[in-house]
Image (cartoon, rainbow, N blue to C red; front, side, top):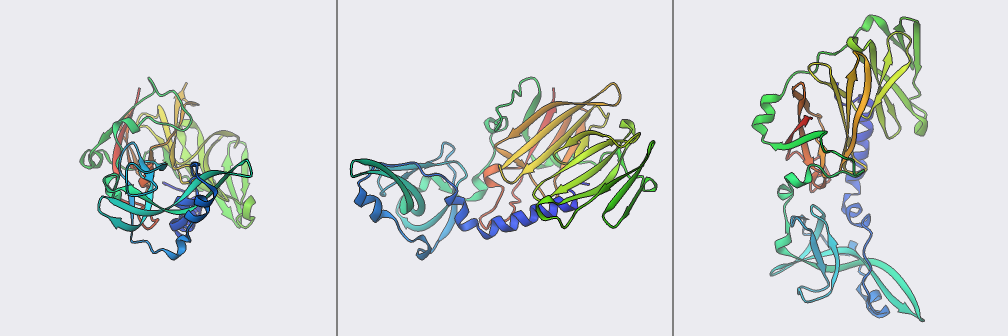
Length: 348
């Protein structure tokens, strides 16, 4: 009951696509900064990178990022900055420098007009700034950074823990989501759920390409008088709670909802492969059955690991999560990395 089958299939397909393009996409998607140059210099520096073999793939391990230099000399022009965790393709080794191929932006004057251009060039990085994937690790300062600048004060407390502490906290799936197969039937593309107001049907369209929608029954949540379905779309998905009385929608989650041992909280964490983030949703159950969203934060520095996703409640207000630094989610070959770290998240 972790990641719904359809959505996991789509995510795997996306991963495969990413892997097949990994040698070029990690660089070409970066928008290069412009560097002032003459027209002649800008033209001559462009190279056919496909003719230059890659010796090895390494990563920027300097926490503040690494400058790209035009020559193997710190007095030479600085062309750009690569962020912590950025993957580079090394094509040469010169004493204290790595020679890499990178897309560089330049600007120059042509006929009195400012012109901007970009192209692949052979440039240099200090060896001291570059290292292996295993050196890309989360630090305490990274844990609260979000894409959406959400206010986390007095909401959650996040700490890095070791694997041993995580393993001790691992538990079985929550006991709130239980399958009641007698109330559910499926034929062809129609999923029917029996409610207090009769059967409610959900019609899937698995072959509709971009309009694809696939419903799957996950289970009933008795204390909320609801049932849970997963819904897979073309490149996305969600989980939805419906009323057991009439089949009306109650609330949706980005990913599988984890219920706290006392049923007071619900947490959903979606591993976002597009933004390289963890989209964290926290809900509170009030008055027995009312579900209210308390927090919606897109953490930009860490991602919940997959295959499988592992999120466990340590106690009614604390959960543990297996994660990776967002820049180390993929390994050198573009596959899912398995050099995990572990977090403890306390709801305040």
